Length: 317
Image (cartoon, rainbow, N blue to C red; front, side, top):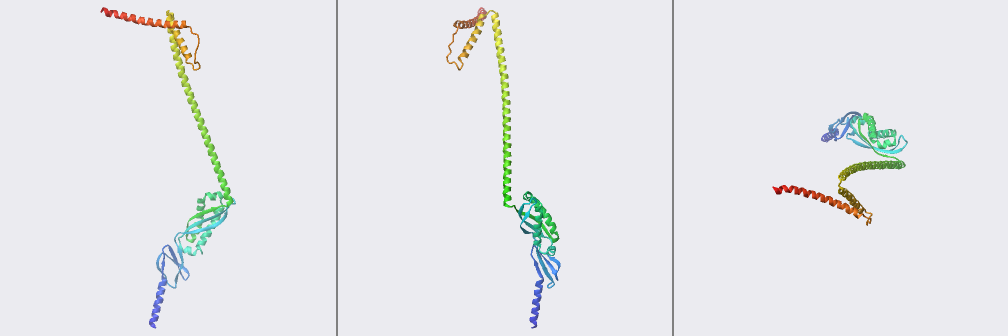
């Protein structure tokens, strides 16, 4: 009987000892309450508490957690009804405050986010909501993080997942976007046509300038050629005049015959005349040719005489 009682006492003692051993997993912290009052916080690891006096109060997850914000309807400043939802990332930094400063931590964070989303987004226009999500997220994070500091919680991030305007508003926005794109396309097309016309006008201007410069250069060279031709003709006329003054009628015949033959060549080379029939003064032409022959004989005779004169001293020698 006595041994049975001892065994029972030992068994109860072991149960009490095992009841005082607590193992806290990694990423969690446990609060310890003594007679219902918070005394300390147990970090991860093996711990001993006083059985029947101390007990575990709250088991808190100290890792970063994600909380979905359900969809809710919001009226913007320009009276547009939109449906908004989001997500919140938070982390418990102080287990005691998170356990005893607020009754239901997740519900409190969720309601705080929903009310601040309505406040922040309700003070903005629809265009601002759709184009400035970063600004909305920053404002929400600042407000909510400050409000949750007494709870020992750090809100690390708040993201707006979706902003859904009504269907008719989406259709009107689509028409507005299409009109804006058509407007930009028309402006770009007009700018392109304008630029093309400007470039075309510049090209025509440069072409006209180059043509004018070419014509000026050609006219300058034609004038120079005519000037040289006139100088040559003047020299020829002067030589003929000197020959006539010297009494050499053959030179006059040569000059007239050359002009006569050149005129016949121009007439024969004309593209609109295939057959040329015209009276010719054969005696005048033959006389002119005879004058040319006489000039040739005189020239040849002078050369022969000079050779004979040059050859006599050679024979005497």
